[in-house]
Image (cartoon, rainbow, N blue to C red; front, side, top):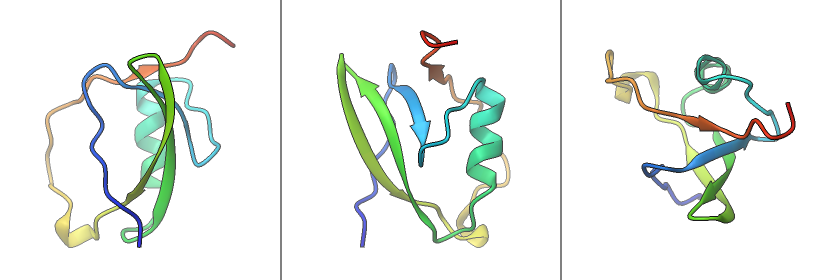
Length: 79
């Protein structure tokens, strides 16, 4: 069973299970391509340190219907 971690303000998403998002809306599309209960790896940069976070997505019943938009940073150095 994977541990569930929270993203923190200032975290930079480098990839999601090896898939590199090009925009904030693509982060949402990538996450929605997984089913509830699936475990995936977020590769992020936090306080100048790269790390992997194992997260398990909630079931549809547990997902909030509306959420406040989160600010997402992406690594654009290779674009």
